[in-house]
Length: 132
Image (cartoon, rainbow, N blue to C red; front, side):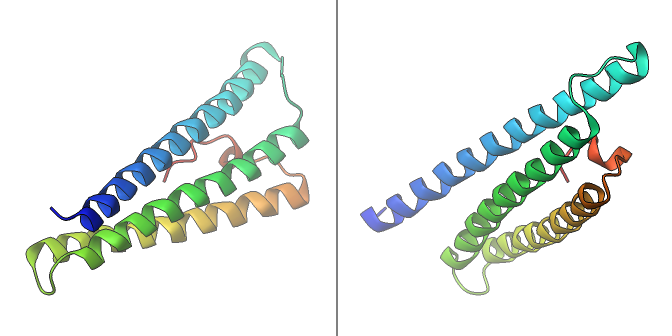
């Protein structure tokens, strides 16, 4: 394995690690919002008001888009590294397509969160798990 290929592979793995950490942190934020909503329903007690939840949810969705973009970049790099018309390139192409669909879904969810934030309307979508 040449040095350039090794550096590219290392970069891809590091970006995957970063993306995974971002998804985990985003899930923890979403879990916090969900526990807050549960506390409101069970005990009538909240740690955050609706405006704070809407803001946290909106910015959390932006973070998710960043993680999805990182995954999309890594998927694209993996696709381009494979030989033309190979089975590995076909598989990476399918994964790349999946990343594109995930990005579309994340953008739609961000838009819904933006509308909820703009209208100051708290809906179940604001406390759901952010992972697509």
